[in-house]
Image 1 (cartoon, rainbow, N blue to C red):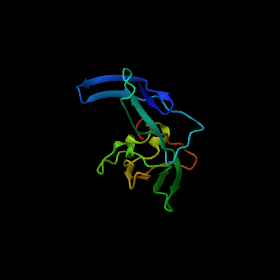
Image 2: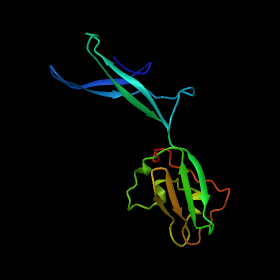
Image 3: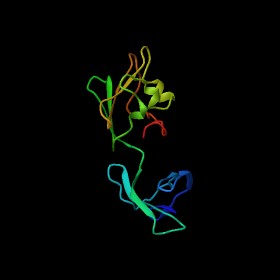
Image 4: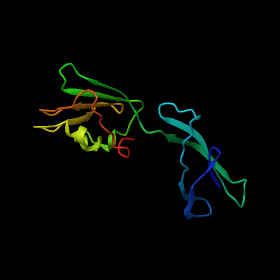
Length: 156
Protein backbone atom coordinates (compact mmCIF):
# COMPACT_ATOMS: atom_id res chain seq x y z
CA UNK A 1 0.00 0.00 0.00
CA UNK A 2 1.35 3.43 -0.96
CA UNK A 3 -0.02 6.64 0.56
CA UNK A 4 0.72 10.34 0.13
CA UNK A 5 -0.47 11.92 3.35
CA UNK A 6 -4.00 10.51 3.60
CA UNK A 7 -4.38 9.86 -0.15
CA UNK A 8 -3.67 6.55 -1.84
CA UNK A 9 -1.45 6.26 -4.90
CA UNK A 10 -3.24 6.16 -8.25
CA UNK A 11 -1.08 3.29 -9.39
CA UNK A 12 1.68 1.02 -8.15
CA UNK A 13 3.64 -1.32 -10.41
CA UNK A 14 6.41 -3.65 -9.25
CA UNK A 15 9.29 -3.03 -11.66
CA UNK A 16 11.58 -5.64 -10.10
CA UNK A 17 11.97 -7.48 -6.83
CA UNK A 18 14.63 -9.52 -5.08
CA UNK A 19 14.96 -10.78 -1.51
CA UNK A 20 16.59 -7.47 -0.50
CA UNK A 21 15.24 -4.85 -2.93
CA UNK A 22 11.93 -4.03 -4.53
CA UNK A 23 11.67 -1.30 -7.18
CA UNK A 24 8.25 0.29 -7.66
CA UNK A 25 6.81 2.65 -10.24
CA UNK A 26 4.32 4.84 -8.37
CA UNK A 27 1.73 7.26 -9.75
CA UNK A 28 0.90 9.85 -7.09
CA UNK A 29 -2.62 11.21 -6.69
CA UNK A 30 -3.48 14.63 -8.02
CA UNK A 31 -3.14 17.14 -5.25
CA UNK A 32 -5.62 19.97 -5.28
CA UNK A 33 -6.35 21.09 -1.78
CA UNK A 34 -7.47 24.69 -1.25
CA UNK A 35 -6.85 24.48 2.51
CA UNK A 36 -3.39 22.92 2.23
CA UNK A 37 -0.33 24.97 3.08
CA UNK A 38 1.99 25.69 0.19
CA UNK A 39 5.30 27.47 0.65
CA UNK A 40 7.07 28.70 -2.49
CA UNK A 41 4.75 26.51 -4.56
CA UNK A 42 5.48 23.34 -2.58
CA UNK A 43 3.33 21.21 -0.29
CA UNK A 44 5.28 18.40 1.35
CA UNK A 45 3.55 15.28 2.66
CA UNK A 46 4.68 11.97 4.09
CA UNK A 47 4.77 9.20 1.52
CA UNK A 48 4.45 5.75 3.02
CA UNK A 49 4.96 2.30 1.54
CA UNK A 50 3.70 -0.69 3.51
CA UNK A 51 3.90 -4.31 2.40
CA UNK A 52 0.36 -5.72 2.43
CA UNK A 53 1.44 -9.22 3.39
CA UNK A 54 3.71 -8.03 6.22
CA UNK A 55 2.80 -4.61 7.63
CA UNK A 56 5.97 -4.61 9.75
CA UNK A 57 7.87 -3.99 6.50
CA UNK A 58 7.44 -0.30 5.66
CA UNK A 59 9.29 2.73 4.41
CA UNK A 60 8.52 6.44 4.36
CA UNK A 61 9.88 9.62 2.88
CA UNK A 62 8.82 13.21 2.21
CA UNK A 63 7.15 13.87 -1.14
CA UNK A 64 6.49 17.28 -2.65
CA UNK A 65 3.48 18.39 -4.66
CA UNK A 66 4.01 21.57 -6.68
CA UNK A 67 1.62 24.27 -7.81
CA UNK A 68 2.21 25.71 -11.28
CA UNK A 69 4.13 28.99 -11.18
CA UNK A 70 2.00 32.11 -11.49
CA UNK A 71 3.15 35.47 -12.82
CA UNK A 72 3.38 37.83 -9.86
CA UNK A 73 4.44 40.93 -11.81
CA UNK A 74 5.33 42.24 -15.24
CA UNK A 75 7.21 45.50 -15.63
CA UNK A 76 8.13 47.27 -18.87
CA UNK A 77 11.40 49.17 -18.89
CA UNK A 78 11.38 52.97 -19.37
CA UNK A 79 12.16 52.71 -23.09
CA UNK A 80 9.36 50.21 -23.70
CA UNK A 81 11.78 47.68 -25.16
CA UNK A 82 11.82 44.98 -22.49
CA UNK A 83 9.48 43.21 -20.08
CA UNK A 84 10.64 41.77 -16.76
CA UNK A 85 8.29 38.88 -15.90
CA UNK A 86 8.50 37.67 -12.30
CA UNK A 87 6.94 34.40 -11.06
CA UNK A 88 5.67 33.60 -7.56
CA UNK A 89 8.12 30.70 -7.15
CA UNK A 90 11.00 29.09 -9.00
CA UNK A 91 10.23 27.62 -12.42
CA UNK A 92 11.97 25.03 -14.56
CA UNK A 93 12.64 27.86 -17.06
CA UNK A 94 10.26 26.13 -19.51
CA UNK A 95 13.02 23.60 -20.14
CA UNK A 96 15.01 26.26 -22.01
CA UNK A 97 18.80 26.17 -22.13
CA UNK A 98 21.01 29.24 -21.67
CA UNK A 99 21.34 29.59 -25.45
CA UNK A 100 17.64 29.15 -26.28
CA UNK A 101 15.89 32.52 -26.61
CA UNK A 102 12.66 31.57 -28.39
CA UNK A 103 9.61 33.08 -26.69
CA UNK A 104 7.52 30.31 -28.33
CA UNK A 105 8.73 28.01 -25.54
CA UNK A 106 7.04 30.22 -22.96
CA UNK A 107 3.99 31.85 -24.55
CA UNK A 108 1.10 30.53 -26.65
CA UNK A 109 1.38 31.70 -30.27
CA UNK A 110 -1.74 33.86 -30.49
CA UNK A 111 -2.56 37.45 -31.56
CA UNK A 112 -0.90 39.01 -28.49
CA UNK A 113 2.18 36.82 -28.98
CA UNK A 114 2.47 38.13 -32.56
CA UNK A 115 2.70 41.67 -31.14
CA UNK A 116 6.02 40.80 -29.45
CA UNK A 117 7.77 40.70 -32.80
CA UNK A 118 7.58 42.45 -36.16
CA UNK A 119 10.77 43.05 -38.12
CA UNK A 120 12.90 40.98 -35.73
CA UNK A 121 11.75 38.25 -33.32
CA UNK A 122 11.41 38.90 -29.61
CA UNK A 123 13.91 37.15 -27.35
CA UNK A 124 13.11 35.50 -24.02
CA UNK A 125 15.99 35.04 -21.59
CA UNK A 126 15.74 33.62 -18.07
CA UNK A 127 17.94 35.62 -15.69
CA UNK A 128 16.93 33.40 -12.75
CA UNK A 129 14.40 30.62 -12.20
CA UNK A 130 12.03 33.38 -11.00
CA UNK A 131 12.59 36.03 -13.68
CA UNK A 132 12.14 36.03 -17.44
CA UNK A 133 13.28 39.01 -19.51
CA UNK A 134 11.40 39.52 -22.77
CA UNK A 135 13.25 41.74 -25.23
CA UNK A 136 10.66 42.97 -27.71
CA UNK A 137 11.47 42.66 -31.40
CA UNK A 138 12.01 45.72 -33.59
CA UNK A 139 8.58 47.07 -34.54
CA UNK A 140 6.76 45.26 -31.71
CA UNK A 141 3.19 46.50 -31.14
CA UNK A 142 2.45 45.00 -27.71
CA UNK A 143 0.50 47.47 -25.57
CA UNK A 144 -0.49 47.67 -21.90
CA UNK A 145 -3.66 45.61 -21.53
CA UNK A 146 -2.64 43.00 -24.14
CA UNK A 147 -2.72 39.49 -22.64
CA UNK A 148 0.09 37.03 -23.23
CA UNK A 149 -0.79 33.42 -22.39
CA UNK A 150 1.75 31.10 -20.76
CA UNK A 151 2.13 27.58 -22.11
CA UNK A 152 0.49 25.77 -19.20
CA UNK A 153 2.46 22.56 -19.69
CA UNK A 154 5.84 24.14 -20.42
CA UNK A 155 6.45 26.56 -17.57
CA UNK A 156 6.59 24.47 -14.40
